[in-house]
Amino acid sequence: MDNQAFIKAVKNIAKEKGISEDVIWNAMQLALITAYKKNFNAQTNVQVDINQETGKIKIVSLKTVVEEVNDNYLEINLEEAKKVNPESKIGDVLEEEVTPQDFGRVAASTAKQVVTQKVREAERESIMSEFNDKQEELVVGLVSREDASNYYIDLGRAHGILPKTETIPGENVVMGSSIKVYITKIENTSKGPRIMLSRTHYGFLKRLLELEVPELQEGIVVLYSIAREAGVRSKIAVYSENVNIDPIGACIGEKGERIQRIIEELNGEKIDVIKYDKDPIIFIKNALSPARDIKVYITNKREQLALVIAEGDNVSLAIGKKGQNIRLAARLTKYKIDLKTSEQAQLAGINFSDYEGCDDFE
Image (cartoon, rainbow, N blue to C red; front, side):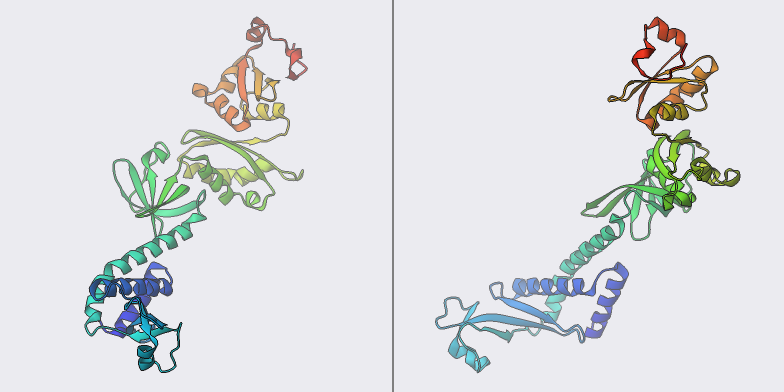
């Protein structure tokens, strides 16, 4: 390879890998010093000069000018130094070209591995830099391959790992298709960034909501909390400081279009949009929807314990299928909820006057 072809190759590598040309030139310098010392003179103090315009490589020996030489590889006396540079004086560092005649051939074979390693390191750092700020973000990739446990998602300069356990139950992941995924974790490894993905994480739903509901991005509507059981049901709690804004309506959209697009992305997962309230009693009531006519008592505010009294059909509605509704409500409100009928409460000897809550219990 001639010098101009070499320069062109450096520029192409830098562009292709998305790294600085200086990184490659610096790697080359280190590699050529290693090559020279390995093949010619390990003890000599040298530097490598590479002309980035012409590609010409020059090896320069560095010796300190001294009165009395103790190390011939690192020092030179004043008399000998003046033969090279008449203006030399004690303490100067004398530079003298020592490029071997066949150095190009030896250097190319020796430096290749070192340069490749440096380029890989720089590429890894560049990719890490690109993806570092994307943790906990929604990205779109292509499903490129799979094995027994994972799907591998092409994200451009890197591949992410989507464990099959992190896909929505019942969904069909098609090879070559575009897919939205949530980045849960990014690790820097010797083989490059390890990007872990999910479609079941509650953060995936959060980012989808922000994508579909501009009021969330603008801060007009605030997302207080999310409780999710992927593929089955989720509850989200929202509110707005602006009394003229309907936070639930903003999330659902006209004719339910906004929430429907999210439900389709989540493979039919049901989404309950709940209004958050600073009063935990009202919030818990809202969270236990579709149950109605329930009474809520805060039995321990510090430990966030609540007692809920429900009757008739509202008991099963509050609990939900396999306990799902009350479980999601507890996670949404961050309260541990104990559900009883009035009869069960009386049999347990509960004195409602001891607790903060409804004052209309009979």
